[in-house]
Image (cartoon, rainbow, N blue to C red; front, top):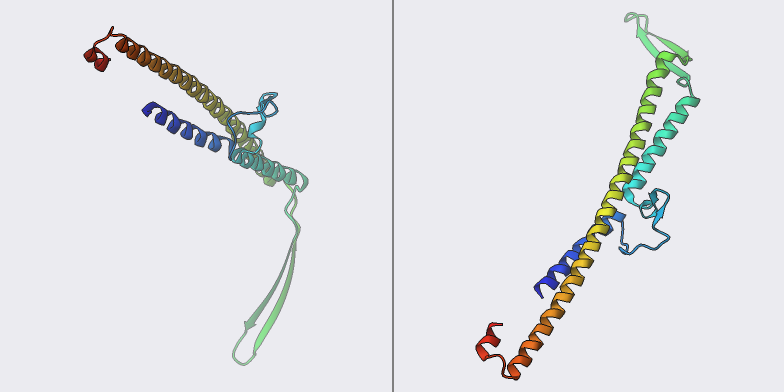
Length: 187
């Protein structure tokens, strides 16, 4: 009973780890459809960590794409008003200023921005790849643990069956008078 309780506890722990691994409630028994497709496991397509990594890659790709299309900063229009007082008797004078700034897209401006965007894209892709690899390793580990637990459960069932049979044989031996009461109690 103690071993059965321990096995149930370990089973509950592994089920919790499994649902954490796949990002939701799921059965540890995968359909053939959810098994391997190429080198990628379909089970991970909805995992929250992988979705976040994919979103980071897509955002980095969009930033890189927008930087490639807009090679310069947008034009700026500035408007200003200034009031000055010359002396106490003159009153105040107002000045109105309008400015237009049309920046040119130079290599000095674009090269660091493109390098930063490409670096961010590479980093996001690396994180996505590492997340997928880590999840695949965790899945393989969880499957191995589930297989091991199944083997252990089968072994414990066989052991319990053998112990029950041994107890029946000893009781028969006692009933036939071949075993004494002290030997029965000892065994």
